[in-house]
Image (cartoon, rainbow, N blue to C red):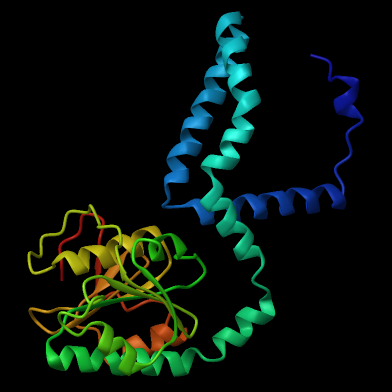
Length: 269
């Protein structure tokens, strides 16, 4: 079979490689932003419609193709409205310069110390708590489920928030950089099968957020006063202050396999 003239004249150069790499990176970052959100389900529906349109076009089903063509014509405007939260989040993410991130990370050690001290106080007092620390993936959508705040992270503030019968004690605190941006927030519960019945709602919420985002989530058990650490879809029971400090400071990307519990169908350790 002869090769078409247009294909024979194609030349793949460095510029083409750079364009492909750039588009792939943009798509990758976009998928990271919408991962774990309702936008994924909507995007899946759009892909199904495109596949149906292709099949109808190949089979010359004119009525279906005309209907879908009209839908796609007005779908762009509808998509902007439907994906407004995700688009706003993406633009805000792009607006965060590397310099801003670098300056924010310079204070991670100080923030880690304040969080560790607060967790230790809460554990010694037997007060339940859940603290989520934002990393690359923004947690703004979860802040909207609670009370937005703008307060500098401190051990005193965190222990005060989780004091029993305080207005914001029942929910999660979300931290971005050195700032508490939300309290009393509702986190998604993990749907994984977990055999350890001692894990309560706070632990399932921590696992749920760790499954859907790259956040670091700390849980203080009200029943056992132990501290657990959830990250990358895994739960570490009885996490030590040193381990928490290292993970929060970025010196230890993941707890060791001996102390972590895998969520996906695994038995609790």
